[in-house]
Every structure is written in C-alpha cells, then in structure tokens.
Length: 389
Image 1 (tube, rainbow, N blue to C red):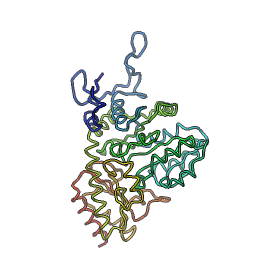
Image 2 (cartoon, helix red, strand yellow; image 1 turned 45 degrees about the horizontal axis):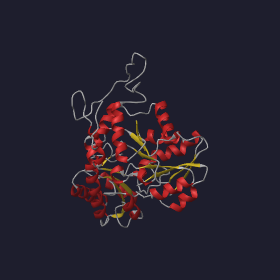
Image 3 (cartoon, rainbow, N blue to C red; image 1 turned 90 degrees about the vertical axis):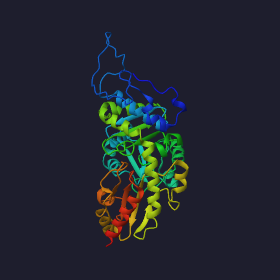
Image 4 (spheres, rainbow, N blue to C red; image 1 turned 60 degrees about the vertical axis):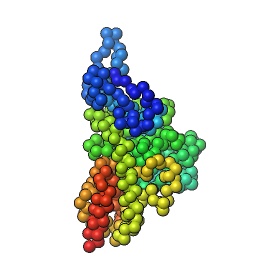
C-alpha cells in the first residue's frame, strides 16, 4: 500500500524515523500515514485474504507501520511487536516460557514487573531468582545450566540507574542455554541497541520516551531471530488480544519521528543537571551513569552511544522528610509517575513503591524533559532550599 525509501539502507536511523520510513499514502500522497481503524476485511471471491489482513485483533496496518520503525531503530532482524502496555509486552515474554522454567531477574527493576514476577509468575509454574545483575559473578552463580531459560535485564535500572554489561550477560545466558531479554526503556534505541550486543529480545515501555508525549499507553518487543520462541510470543499476543490499537499506534509512530531530537536534548540536559547537582550542598548523592564516579560508568561508555539517557536520581541531605518536602516545593517539575515525556517529572519513589522497595527513602527520581536546563536546575535548587528551610 505504501512505498519505502529506496535508499533507506544508506540513510541514518534518524532520517528514517523522521520520515516514518519514507512511506507516502498512495491514495492522497500524504506524508503522514493514515490511521487504519477497520476491525474486519473483505474476503476474495475464492474466500482468501489477498490483502493479508483478516481481523483487527491479531493485526493492523497502522500498528505494522509503527513496528517497522521500531524494528529499524533496534536493528531487529525478526521485527517488532507492539502491545497495549509495557506490562503486556513484558509479561508476554514470561508467558511464552513453559512451566518449570527458571528465570533470573534483577533485584532492582521496574517495580510493577518485579511485583508481577513475585506474585504471578509462580502461578505459571515459573521459578524466579533475583540478583544484582550488574555483578556478573552473581549473575553467573544464579544461572542454572539446563534449567534457566530466560535472563531478564534492565539497564539502566529504575530507579538506581545501575548498568549491566549486556554483552557479558548474553555470553553467560547463552552458555547456559538461556535467552537474554533486556528492558531498554530508559536507554532507548538512540543510546543502546541490546540486540547488537547479543541480546535475544529487547523490551520497551513505549509509553515513555519512544512516544515522548505522555498521551499513549503502549509496550514493545523486538527480536534478533525469528525462532520458535519469538513465534510463541506472537501467539500469546494474538490469543490474549494484547495488540496496540491503531490510534495509539499512530500516536506512537508520531512520537518516534522526533525520538532522536528529544533524546539528544534530554540526555544532554540530564548530564548537565547531574554534574551540577553532584556539587550541590543539599544533595548527598547523584545516581547517573554519565558521571565518572558512577560504578557502571565504564560499561555505560562502552554500550551507550551519544549520551547516557534522560533519567537520574538524587539522594537528598536530611533523609526522607527533606526529600518529600523538596518534591513538594518544585514549580517547573511536575510531581507525577512515569518518565520520558517532554515535560520533566519528579517523584519520591519509595513512598510510591511501598513496603519491600529497594529504593532508598531519601531518593527522588527525576525524568528530564526538553525544558531549558538552567530553568530545571533553578527549580530544583529552590525546592531543595525550601525543603530544608
């Protein structure tokens, strides 16, 4: 129905994403792909579906177009799949495993998925061990050859921003007969492409920076090989009706067209804020992999390109009470859950995650938007001072 750029293999991903793979609507010649909302499609006289579309639950043209852009960005040879949420995408990977399979996952990771693994994975007959995956010796010790089927990483990890060596973790997983999946939400394909480092699957909460406008709930998976496991994930999405709707896919496609611009701005601003906050008298510690003193800095320099991401956390002098008061006094930052949007957000994560959280109580998580960097710093500075007043 549409035509790709003929020279797309010679173009930078930035150019391909900006033009949504260069597709032009053949009917109107529109440069913005139309939204295909039909849920059903006409059969041919011989009862076949020559268009390739049968019904809206397993497939949709607008969703396919957004998937093609993500697959290009991640260099995913097997393609990408979009889901109705990040949790739907992540859990589809675990649901594609078999009862009795063993999983290794990070101790510090996206809280909702960690909770799901703790409470629901056993219902599927899965066994899960949580380790500090940035410590490769711990990861090696946790993997059980012949039993471990999946190693799940999150790097940078939310909200402590630890860095795990993807290439080394892939070698450990593959030697044991396991697959490696990486939640790369907080890196984005602009900075890290896990599949090129040996990962088998990459996952995104596409609600976040891939969309970038805080108006879509979406999830995504991309794969290196079109193997039986990837096809099992496709079956899970089809059977459970987890596909992303066409309007949401359209908005996500719109967001990915400016991903490189936003990420370049957000990452540069995050680094500048981290450097200045590290010298602030009311900040006890800054957690950001772009800082040389960060424990994972050297690995981050090796596997992240063009920046260290848009997320950082600060630990506030004065403990939990001072941190909560600081968040209460921001004016430009928004006190809200989520991350990756064009607006900057701040959140006291320990109180959100509740009992059992590995998050320090003096920690504030900062999602860096595209506002003026000096304005963001000035807002944090006055909030920190007000929080200690």
